[in-house]
Image (cartoon, rainbow, N blue to C red; front, side, top):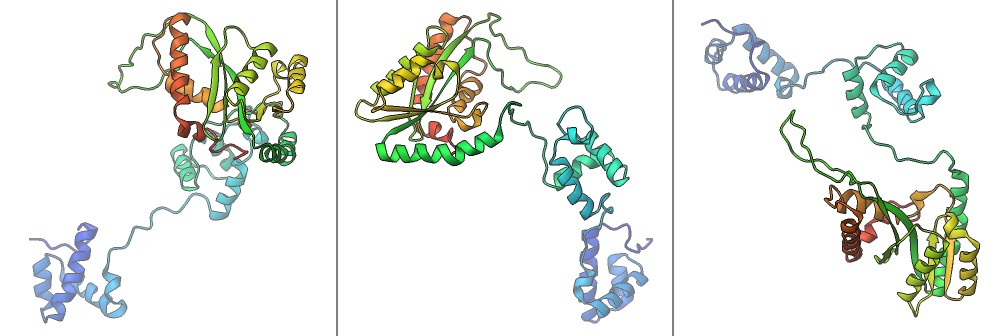
Length: 338
């Protein structure tokens, strides 16, 4: 039988042979016997013994393959991270989002290196990046005003809440569409499942307010939200806390800032205070998460066919959220204010 020199033997098996060969050698076995026993050449055994004598037992252990040299250096990787942390528009692209094709182009132009698309993907993963869906932020948003509100107005709200021993609520309204959000389902490859949902158009308006304590007050509006419906909702909040003062934080919608609303707040200033968030800053309002949870979880793929069926369904789903204070508290996690 032809003896091997070790190059075609699996690495783990070869490590075992090398270590066992040294044991046999120490026990007084001849080189030729060891060679015969393992089916390798005498030269291979001599080489192992010589390596053992020069560098010790660890030099015979299996070593991880070095692999190909990285396409870009560590310094280039640091520069690349700084590049793609900025908008892609800064580098001449039409839209601000990054994809592997654009990053490949940037690497070519900045570092003069042509990297395959698949290697760009692997490199990004190693650098701690992942493909993500960005959160929307209005172009009209003034971040300086948002920061100032957090720094100056929010502490005033907290101070008044402590002074009043008040219930704090974040308030918002939303239009809930009769056309449902569809989730995912398991199906055979190549056989896209079909789900029957209504083709009717329509929506209902819902007002809600949630507190960091895990409480929620809501109502389904009979018509579009205006200053009158907002005042009625403020009254509903107050009725739920007859013996407590109330602080409500809401957005700058015209229905919230109308003269009738300001007059109502002034008339009841000993019982209720209303603060307004900076414009275009829904991320400051945890009540926005109520609508996300309602539409994408509770009402996902619902089978209501018209508003008559839809209205009680929405009411029951909102009531189910209302009964889960821990779920409501979770809406505050990640908020810039908490």
